[in-house]
Structure formats: structure tokens, C-alpha cells
Image (cartoon, rainbow, N blue to C red):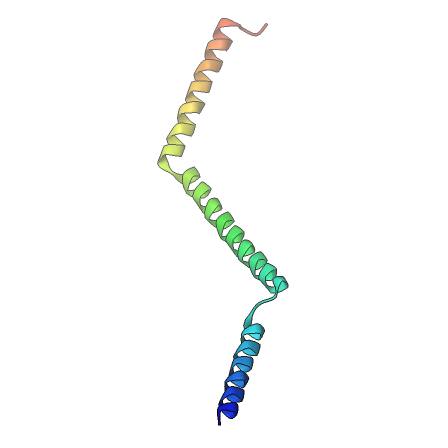
Length: 87
């Protein structure tokens, strides 16, 4: 009786150990999963970055800043033309 219980326990341990080994991923599968996760992350990050720059470019602050710099450049250009006329 003790022998049959010991054999049954050993068979259960062996079966559980075999299933556990089959469930573990190989190093190749780990690298493939990691590569896929990094690709998804970079794709998502690039989309978010693109959207952010578009929102910044379309913002009122960006438009006002661009107009201010254009006005300042035009004023400076007019002063230079006034002080150093073309001959």
C-alpha cells in the first residue's frame, strides 16, 4: 500500500514537472515577445509625439509667437534698410 502511494505521488510530481517545463517560454520566445512589445511602444510613442507637435503648432500661443517674431524681423529689416540704403 505504501509503495503504491509513493508511486502515485511520484507520477503526479513527474506530470506536474513536465507540464511546468512545457509552459515555460524559451529564450527565443522571450526575445520575440520583447521585440513585439518594444515595437508597439515605439509606434504608440511616435503617434503621441506627432499628435503633440501638431497640437502645439496649431495652438494660439504658437501662432501669436510666430506672428510676433515675424513682426520683429520685419521691423529689424526695415531699420537696416533705412540705415543702410541700397545703392
